[in-house]
Image (cartoon, rainbow, N blue to C red; front, side, top):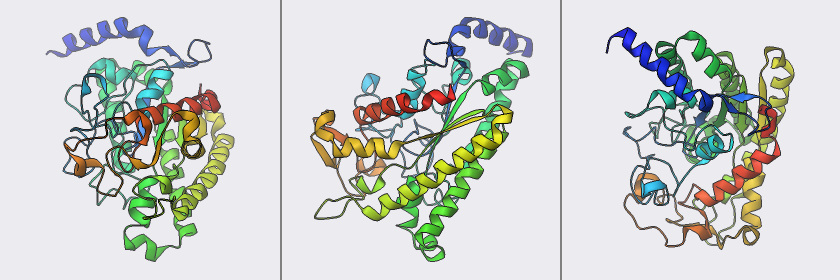
Length: 355
């Protein structure tokens, strides 16, 4: 298509989509405009970026997606929607947050946000290597590529508006602890646990500052969930949560929360805002008070409970018939119902600070 024709089509699409790309950030209260939602992270929020990668961290096959619209396995590591979809919907931007790496992205997708998250990734650069995932640094590179693509399609002024009015989320760290420090000897020999967590915090802060430097003004930072309570990480026999992994997550979260406060103090002159989003205690509350939230099964996953009951290892395996009763879908990831409750709590707690 000739260049002038492409620009004409892009301009027409912008006119058609104007109400959508200017969604109200306060969901109808008029606080500020949210143009788009962007997600960085691991398999908790990967909607399909790993689908064509040579990796075991994929979910584009049944039983994944059995409760997604059309029963489609899109690459989301759950039975249905994942947190990125829920946040985009609650923020009034769109119902589903698509993966950036894909063949069917339209201009409307690019204008309203995408996910760069990759299953198996982490803040530690070594974490993504065994899973051949896109590292945190690689995800930032994809975002820069996205910016260049957007400028080409809609011009620098409109691209700048989309980038500056967007809300950004990052969700990593669980793989760093569970699948790196406690599973691979190298980091365990290099660091004791507090030192490794300090290294992770430093890496996470550097990632957040770089994301801020390349255009993200509003960043929501998810802490690490209580990974010791995931079915695959629980103690064999007693099925109790692994307290050491949970302590590592808590140590990281308390440290990163202080760093988020520091970033807000240092970078507010640039109209930047950062918010710590507590997934740890919200999910832990769900686990400990599961009866109240309508769950019957806490220690087991709907698709199994050991380390091989997730991702490519459960390809085409049958799932339980009553996923609605389970907090965990596989041995590491939550069900859509559990994610929805947790995200709803987070949304009403402190997400308003970004809007």
